[in-house]
Length: 232
Image 1 (tube, rainbow, N blue to C red):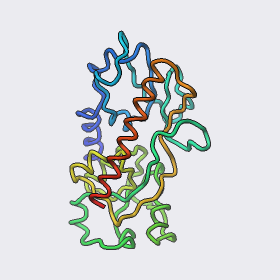
Image 2: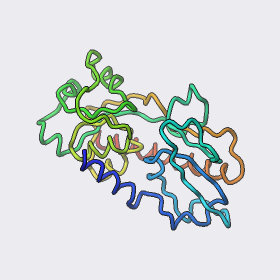
Image 3: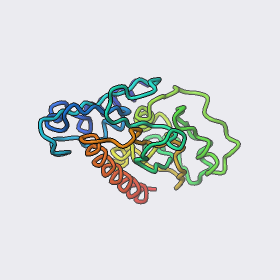
Image 4: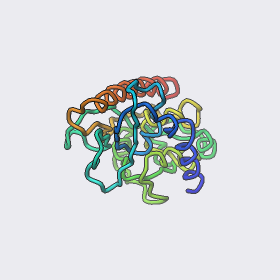
């Protein structure tokens, strides 16, 4: 959907995106591979780390790329239990919708109402666990509408009232803060995949950055839980 794509690009380019002019004096030749949405939500600025004479380079790997290449630190999204690594966030999945969509479809009061709502589809976050939690285990994955292969686009499409998203509150904080998205029915299930540091025993600047990133992710988890408890 054009509006969702345009909005997502604006979001990545805006205040939450990593600014090139703020990447000076962070790390010397530190290359980090990371998925685009998570990279955009990091509050990277001149105060991140104090290493002198350094430059941080964020690199977005291709979807089918198996490793981080020359990266000193690799952040992946996937099955950490299968591949190993240091888990950054214990994410949950909740149904997220915009107030505009809810006004259009009429009142929703119980989890079973999920069956009559327009659902966004993405291979990255299947609906099955949420269907089961809602008592709708027999319901099939949505078969209509665009197939979104980026979690940021899924959230932006939901914020544009194009459907309900299976979303992670840690990644949706900017929309939850503004009221652009609200959680539905009090449903919450553990996410089947995690964001994790795939690099074993990072050293030097990479280790310093990894420690900072763990703290950022802990704060993201805390804020996301607070936002969901406030609006769920």
